Length: 283
Image 1 (tube, rainbow, N blue to C red):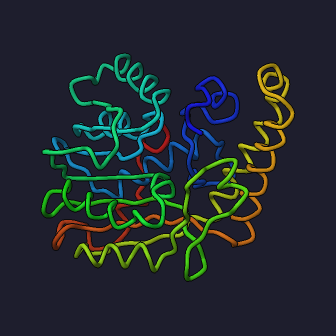
Image 2 (image 1 turned 180 degrees about the vertical axis):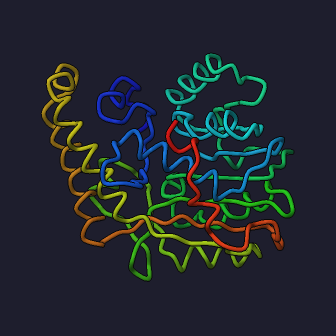
């Protein structure tokens, strides 16, 4: 799915090449601003401090790790299974002037050994893990996270007790995917003795994000038709619009979970620190 080609995704994603739910802080926010908002929002929730280490599991095209290094001076590693994404992130790092703080690896997160991180984030990856392997994700995060560290998981969530899959999406879009429900995710966190600090639904934001993607896809259709056949176009049109409808009507949700390894005392007393206005949200 992610190796169709960077050129294809550039046609309908935003300027940051972010392929996950945006965060619309205002009705006037563009898709690009919403994606920058989302990255900024996540990094503020992680309460980053200069010199810390950050791992991004499923780093996409690298927007989050680059923003973390630039704005918080943390040492960030992004990992992905997509060779297209790895190549693009590598070029971004080379052009960023932050190569002393940034690294990207083409590797399965379970193969990452002998390293520890102060912060671990994953955005839109765990949906690809599969029901039978969810426990491995949280066990590996436990192994990789320093005691007293924080992790943020951003993922699509099911509303039914059993989580779920969609047979059409499983066959044509994301083979082997599984949407976990909240009970499953929190249960695995508890099994690893993580402390859940915050959980937030962003369902409406993903509905609007997908509407933007669908509109961009239609606008780019003349270019897409030069390389893709009608079956592919109909498939992606259905995928984007059906997912937008599913989030908007509440068939599925998306959540951000912030959890700690051991007791974490350093967060501010209220959530105001997440919402305080600063210049970083608009860069």
